[in-house]
Each structure stands twice: as structure tokens, then as C-alpha cells.
Image (cartoon, rainbow, N blue to C red; front, side):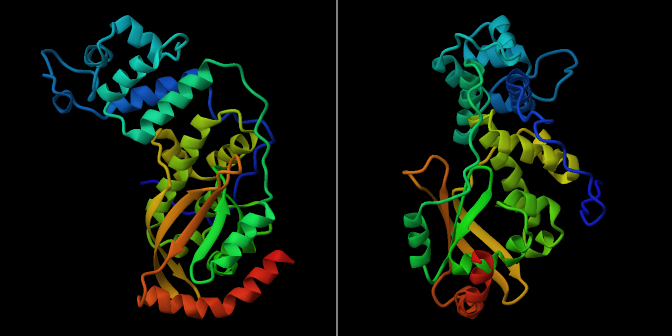
Length: 307
């Protein structure tokens, strides 16, 4: 079993630009291979056939059969040679591999990235517009914050700063949720379901890398996490992708105890890469009562961050 501890001496952060998040051809190959490897023939409506199988999942020729394309063509696609491939063919492959909507989008993003030359690296914006901050500040009975696809937490309302006080206690800016999850020992107590939030953090970053494989800040973050966290490396290697859009999240706050929120993620359409996350508590619930206590501590937490 892997050692999940992170309290020991960390390896040094890799130099800027020393790690490449996505070599597109390799990423396409490993993603498709991992997806077909999880589907046994009977799940795809196929007979296992005679002879000894060297793979537990689908063979290349079986994916090609299900997608209605030649084995040679699918083999070239799995090797990352996707120039000229149509969206109809990709849809057929997605159906054959039983991809969900997030996985299908991830495959399309990878193929589109492979068809074009690298673009100028995405700028790591860390400022939000005053109007967005006013929206957050107007939310007084729920936790609200803005993050980007790299999981940088760019700003929050007062309850957001109070809930994530341990995250913001680290002076490194921008504060980053994935870095907190995998590298800060306090996160394992803070998140009641640490494994679930760790999955979400890694799989969200994998999806972000597919959308923008030339984002230098993301490259550096994934490189740092890969060097310093075995838990992250294991999850990154799975090639699973996920979007963090709606659901429930449980925390164990050192001041008010356990909290359970419903969350919604809302895109800021006037910005390129900003998402508002709002955590709400059911009326009359223990979490709603705890938020009233947390509200009393929120002024000092927010003022400390904003100074």
C-alpha cells in the first residue's frame, strides 16, 4: 500500500518549464488505451472469443469493429495520428468506449490540440474584476469564492476566507486548492472525504490539461504535484477526467466542527477562466447554525487576507 503521508521533507519544486503536462500524441494514446482497458467484451455486447486474451478490456480490433472503422485506422488514431479525423468518427469511438460526456469532451479537446500548432501559453491571471468581488460580498449566508481551471482560489467572500483559513494561511499566492489537498497535511482532517476530493482535484486538472495543454502555469503545477505527491501521481496516471459542477461536500472545521454543504459551480461568462463556487447549507440544519458562528470569525479572517 502506498504511503499517504505528506508531512515528511518534500522534494524541491522543479524548475520552471522543466515538466511538460501533455505530449498530445502520448496523451491520446494513453487515454484511449486506459478507456478500452476498463471495458470487458461482454459489457460491450461482444463474445470474448477463443484463445488467450492478453488484455482484460477491449482489443483494438474490437473497438474498431464497434466504431465501424478499420483496425488500421483506429490503430493510427490511438497512436495520436489524428490529422483529418472527423467528429463523426470520434463520436463513434466515444460510443464504443462508453465515454461519458466529460470523457468525450476531453477526447475532442485532445484531438483539436493535436491538429494545431502550440499557441501562446495562457496567462496566469490572478485578479478578478471589482464587480465579481461585489457579487461575492453580497452573498452573506453562504460560502462563495472564485477559482480558475488550475484551481487557483482567486478571491472569496468573508465566509469563504473563514472556511478556508488554513488554505490562505500559506503565504504562497495564488492560493491553490490542489496544492493544499495534496501537499498540506491539514487537508486530510479538513476534508471529511479526503480521497473523494483528491480524486476531484486530480481529475479536474487532467481535464483542464486536455482543454489547454500549453498552459504554462498548469504545467508547472502538475510538475510540482507529480514530484512531491505519490497520491497525485497515482491519480494522474489513471487518465480519469471529471468536472466539478454540483454535488455535496463535507468539511471538518477546527472552529465549528463538521459541515455539509450543497455546492454549485457557475461560470463567469465575461471572463476567460473564472468559476464562482457557492456552498449553501440547508435551512435549520446543523451546518446552517454553524455558519452563524463562523460568520462571527469571518471578519478577522478576511481582513487578514485582504491586508
